[in-house]
Every structure is written in structure tokens, then in C-alpha cells.
Amino acid sequence: MGDFFLTVDLGTTSVKLIWWSEKGEKAGEDYFPVELHFPFEGGVEFDPETMVKELVKRIDHSPFPLQGMGITNQRETTLVWDEEGKLVYPAIVWQDRRTATWCEANREKENWLFQKTGLFLDPYFSLSKLVWVLEKVRATRPLHFGTLDTYVLWILTAGEVFSTDYTNASRTLIFNLHNLCWDEEIIKEFGLEKILFPQVVPAFHLRGETQITASRIPIYVVLGDQQASFLGQGCFERGSIKNTYGTGCFLMTNWGNSWPEDTQRLLVTLASLEEDRPVFALEASTFSAGVIIEWLKRIGLIKSAQDIESMAESARPLEELLFVPAFCGLGAPHWDPFARGAILGLTPQVGKEELIRGALEAVAFEVGDLIRIIDGISPGGINEISVDGGMSQSKYLLQFQADLSGKVMRVFPEKEATSLGVFYLWANRSGFLSREFIEEKKQKALIFEPRGEEKEREKLWKKWQRGIERVKGWAKNE
Image (cartoon, rainbow, N blue to C red; front, side, top):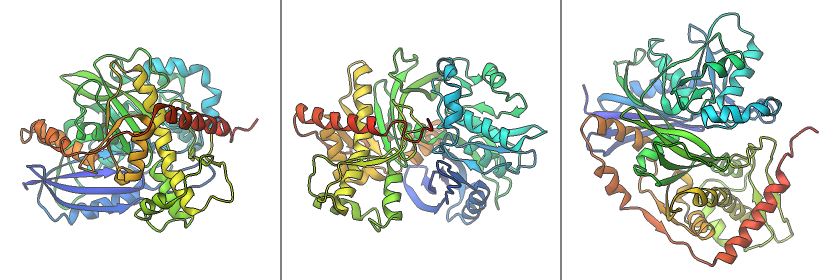
């Protein structure tokens, strides 16, 4: 056996591989892009079979000998396959909006579902996607359902392992958070009796060994990406909070072992299991962050993400300009799949630089909206937030975020906190590293202190609320 551990981050737009030594040092990194397909307005799909083939190739050419690996993944993306491992439909990505009308038609069941799963009825989650696929393919034989981790595990182990972990299961809208099992009433209500659901096991659990790689590699960890980031940033104590600026933005607050009494239409999710007791998190998701940067590149406003900082700094401040990035609808707390993006307050003074600054500020507005809610319902409120993800490298964004929210932003020194969380879980449970490993990293955070007065924050927040009201329900067919 080797001396290194491999983490595989199955992201929305890329797959990242990082090799770690037992001491937590990065030995190597690799990545390859994931090609998304947009078959129709609101549709987002990709081909996971191609992704797995490329992943196997990278593993087979590992520059370091491996003693194990772990997987973290985009959580709500939905896959259905037959007993031979053949997909009956492409993977439907978490951003997909095709089931918005179905969700609206079943709105009366939303509170019932929330009380069981901690999630609201939205196309974001797996349930409506699974129902849609079954109606589309009309299968006559039992089919396997899983999030991306489950499918990749199935393929890597040649069908020997059919499992997921509690964190991924908690994002499907089919998993009961109180009983910690697939909910039979939900399965019956939506006609899913013929679906085969994966076994649910803890995130740290030896699942078996890869069968289709050149050498057999034990798979020790499976963890949803946001829970991995939550762990990687050291949100160990109740009340600790992190935000990941990824394809979307994801705030998570450690709520301990109790179910939040008033969530203000934020989500309840499983952060982890500690000694078989659930650790709940209050989670707030926005759907558009890094996706905005990809859009700016696609339409030619920027050549690379590195262009953004200088262009935003050189832009003229325009009070009326507001970018509302509801590319995939609105997430928490609005849960409006029919909302769409808009640029408001256009005048002849608006140029390329102003639009780019507006795009960065839009991400901060989305997150700031959620910070206000969590601050209001958290015991003791929020003092500081740990942040990671690609966009956390933007000093303009983080300073504006601090100014807008009135909270300290601490940029976690490891940009890939998601992969770090997977590695740390393995290393900690295997006896190599203690919690001090993460605590020492936290002390090296880059800090952004809030500036400005409360009245200015209120003025900005009211502008954002006006913009949100303009875009709600835009794509709804009356």
C-alpha cells in the first residue's frame, strides 16, 4: 500500500483530484472539465459515463502510490440506471429547472415534505427529477437511483457497492431526517415503489475497493460537497458558520443535535453523524455565483477570472445599477424556480467594467440576504463567517460582502476546503491528525473587516429587495 490519500471532488463544472500525505500536505493536484449540456431553456444535464472514464484514466496514472481515496460531490444531481449500470437518461444537474411546473402542482404537499426531510419542494432537489425521469422512460423493470457519488461508486466497484452517505441522502427530498432512512410514505406518494434506493452509511465507512482501475484502491469516504467544506473549515461548534463561493453559494450553520424551531424558509440538512447522533445544519443556498463568471466569459466580457478584479476596481460607482443573477431561479428564502436574471438601472454610463462590478456585487447581495436571516434566528447572532471557494479569492467581492453584511469575513487559507474536509475525515478517523490540524489553518485566514454605516447597508438592502420583486415569477406561464 502507498503513503498517499486521493480526494476526488466531483464538481458541477470540473473534477478535481488532490493527493495528500498523511501529514496533510498537498503532494499533487489535477483536474479536468465537465461539459454541461443545456438541451432546452431551464435544462442542465451532463454525461457521467464520459466523466468516469476520464476519472479512471487519471487514477490509473496516479503519480503517487495510494493507500485509499475519498469522494465528495455535487449533491442533488440525479441519476437513474439499470442493473447493468447503463443510464436510462443523462444526469440531471441540481441547477435544472424542468420540474418547476410539477413542483407548483404539488405545492400543497410542501409542508408535509419539509417536516420529514427539512427541504422545500423545489426542482433543486432529487425527488422531482426522479419522478420526471420515470415518466420519461416508463421502465418496466426495477431501476437504481442515486446521487452522483452513488453512481460513481457503482461503476468504480463494478456494481459491487450500491450506497450513499447520510449527507447526500439528506438532499434528495426522499430521506427522513428523524428516522435516518428512506421515507416509505414519500416513496408511495410519488409512485417510486419500483425504484431501488442505495444503502445509506456514515461518511467514513470502508465501502470496498475499486475494480476497474489498474490497482485496487480502498474507498473510505463519501461526503456531500458542502458538508465536506463545512468540516474542512472547522465548523465543529454550534453556531459556527461557513459560506462557499462555488458555482452557487452555500451558507451552513452548525445547529447541533436539535432541529431548528424556526428556519425562516432556510433548509435543515445533516452536517454529519457523531456517535450515531445527527448534527444538523441550517443551510441557505443560492444558485448563481461562479456560474455568473462563466457566463461573463462565454459572452466575451472577460477572458478569464483574473480579469475581474481590476475591472471591478476601475468601474464607476452607479447607485441605480443592479444585477439580479437568478439564472436558475431563486433559492433560499424565496424558492421561486420561475424567477430569472435581470440587469436593472441601465443608463448610458453603464459599460463593461460597471457590469462586471455589478455581477460581483450581485453575489454579495444574494449572500447578504441570507446572512441577515441567519443572524436574526441564531442564538447570539453572527460575528464572523469563514469562506472558501473560487470566488473567495476576489478581494473586491469579500470587502463588499463585509461592508454589506456588517460581518467579518475570514477567507480560509485552503481554497479547496471541500477536498480538505474529505481528507481530514479520513486522517482523523484513521488516527493520523487531530482537530488542531484544522484549527491551525483557521488562524492563517485573511480577514476582511466591515466598513461603513448601518444606514448605508439598509439603503443597499432595500435596493436589492426591489430588484428581487421585479424578477420573481418571470418565467411562469400565466
